[in-house]
Image (tube, rainbow, N blue to C red; front, top):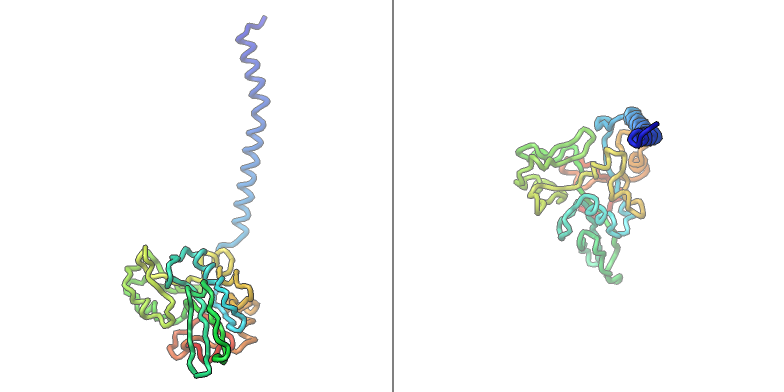
Length: 258
């Protein structure tokens, strides 16, 4: 005759036999998912900077001055919200009948633009601006500690761990595209959203542009949108006389733009 303790032991043994298959099956499922993830990672090659060479195209004729690009840039890259801190911005050019050209950029274009008196204006247009990621970048040449450098895929970056905040690069940039971060006290600028590029994404400013005034791509790939943009438009760069070899290309740029 079985005593109470024997019955209790049998009950626990039966419970465990019924309960064990569930966690075992779960463990097997999780292991299978891990193997699938590892297999997927192995099948997707790692990002290789040497296989790319990036640039950006801008069509001022398509830009409507909405400022979404500047706003998206600030949000994506945690750019300080205070005025005068921008990685990209929009300028409005107002060519007046007097021959004078007035250039404004309220809050980088995020705040919008005030109306102009049509009677006194010959033409108006918007021009997005940013770091030009020059192949012969003056900012790289003057950096005393090598904090500013060019990646194999043609992007000019700043290593904040090396930057000493001397401002030499800010002064050397012919496009006014750099600033000193008010908190880190290191140089900051557009990076083409490099953290997105390595994931196969385009810069945030390109993604949000409602008129596709910004075109991003690989200069070495003929199927790239940027390559097509450059084939079918009259292309100019800003301040070509400086021989900085900028990689931001403008289509049909107005002669008033400096």
